[in-house]
Amino acid sequence: MMEALAYDFFRNALYAGLLASLICGVIGSLVVVNRIVFLAGGVAHASYGGVGLAFFLGLPVLPVTAGFSTLAALSMAWVTLTSRERADTVIGVLWAAGMALGIILLDLTPGYNSDLMSYLFGSILAVPDSDLWLMAGLSAAVLVLVALFSRGLLVMSFDVEFARSRGVPVRFLHFLLMGLTALCVVMVIRVVGLILVMALLTIPPFMAERRTRSLPGMMLLAGCLSAVFCVAGLYLSYALDLTCGATIIAVACVGFVISLAVPQRRQPIAPAQPLGQPGAQSGAPKEGSASA
Amino acid sequence: MLNTPAIEISDLWFAYDGVRVLDQVSLHLDAGDFLAVLGPNGGGKSTLLRLMLGLVKPGGGEIRVLGLPPGQTGGRIGFLPQFTQVSANFPITVLGAVLLGLVRPGITWFRTRAERRREREAALMALSRVGLAEHAGRRLSDLSGGQRQRVFIARAIVSGPELLLLDEPTASVDGRSRQELMALLAELNRDMTIVMVSHDMSTVDGCVKSIACVNRTLHHHADSRLTPLIFAQATGADSIAGCPVELLAHGAVPHRVVLDHDNPDCCGGRHARAAKADAAEGSGAGTDKGGRAS
Image (cartoon, rainbow over all chains, first blue to last red; front, side, top):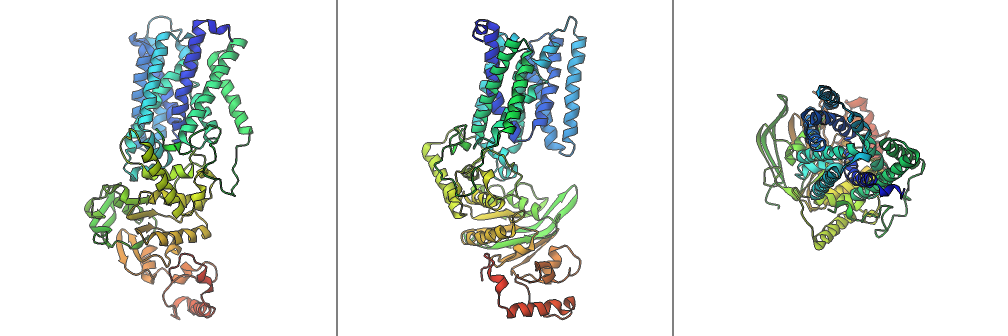
């Protein structure tokens, strides 16, 4: 792997993978505990419409896709809040409509559309410096927003009804979370492609959830797991000459199966655990569940 | 605190899609009361609670909680939602869950070390009141259902509220935990007014001071004894829905506070005989009830 690091494109791939891991750890954890994985899937696929739009208009792909996905995410958030009964159906429609729009727009775009597959399955080995900077900026923005609203997001994720009773602006936070998910999806599309976005958003948080004692701890552990999967997947794809995105996901899936096989740490029911006991593997601060 | 009524409702109504689920509701609740809100499912109990919390706006009428319009009382109201659908795996400690009771709306830019310590102390104090201080560092998912419910009560009282609103506090906990919960509520009632929504009439216990039957309209009974009328109202029956003992007795032995029951017309006099036999035995079946004030 060391000799591979001599190449710019491989270093960029590594940076892109680590940035995506960081953001997937944070947003993926929120997506999993809020049970909006299906919504995130809808956003991921609808964002393909943004890719098509960017090609059709001849504009840079990442910013246009970011804008389009955010709009799609906010409209899905609106649907879930207003027509709760059939929200999942409407999201299914938006999911399909976005993808269809993307493909039709690409058809209408003159020229050879070689990039189509790269957005479906990721093109981590072709991340230019400019995209890397954009990803870093998006990550910073997402992290700042999550930190600012951390307590509200935590209490909403834990117990919506209680959050409402304390005057926490649950509607606003729901829109915020969907917007952040859209930004996260756009970043991860670069790395593993939108088909496989769901795996990075769900597998590491799922593995982390049962092994940590606070939401920030879960985000941290999920981010670390993601980073391990990305680095290992990149290395394997380089060594075995396989497709990067798919290899990263394959590694994550192996990790998922192993995590299911390893029995989770169970505390004895009695005697009670003293307060001063160190945290779980994540090393999360004990009262850190509410820390910003 | 004693001068302002805890809850003052006059001529309130509320409609879902044009159908009035609550109509002509009036209620005056003094501070220090312990009100059980009974009624059939869909009778408007939870809606009434949501109106008190300010989560929904009334169609018309007046409602004041602690002398203020609902929703403006902040931490002066403690709330226990219906047995929450908290995911079994949610990564949070007992202490972390209780700390959420101190969350205020708006952005918290920064909390000083002293503020964090104060919040932590308040949370530990609330946990010791519900008898779970030694579990503070455990994962919430490692606790039993009854213990978890007490954690949520600690979360409701951590802000030092004057009024505690409980939505079905004893649903989905076993009988023993239910008795412990009711004893805990009786003890909390010394410091705060309690309004408890329940469809479970066995929670109407010695510690409840008054009863409101909600079935579109509200009937307030300043006495906590269960009468056939209350049963009729609470079960939504048009006429008397049967004999109270039949509804209260779990197994063969009636073990709740009920009216004198020597009416030979009721249930063929069976219960009159059973009640007498029970009285002769002493209150053996009743004394194991932790929640009884008597």
